[in-house]
Amino acid sequence: AGTDSAAMKRSLSLPFAVEGDVAMVTGAALDRARVQHVLLTEPGELPWRTAFGTPLEAQRHRTIDAVERELVRVRCEAARATWLPELAGDVEAFDAGETALGLRATLAGGVQLEVER
Image (cartoon, rainbow, N blue to C red):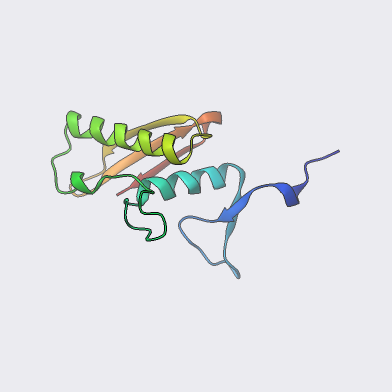
């Protein structure tokens, strides 16, 4: 009575990769890919699901101070809760350089990821 691997959820890897065939992920890597997809997609970007994503475009080219970081954190957390309610976790924003905003997410079970936008 083991785990049936055919029943395990799997999806495309993010970032999209080809390793002989299109790279697929499962488990923690799948959770990481799903969160990245939500955090790096701007609402309106997917014509078939225009509300999907995290509205961060307004934060581009702004000084990243404590108020901006908190606004980004709240927007990221709201997007995660809307699109991935089954993945409890924490999202925080950080200054990733002069022109980039970093997003750090810690999911239930300790899965961590960082993305820059």
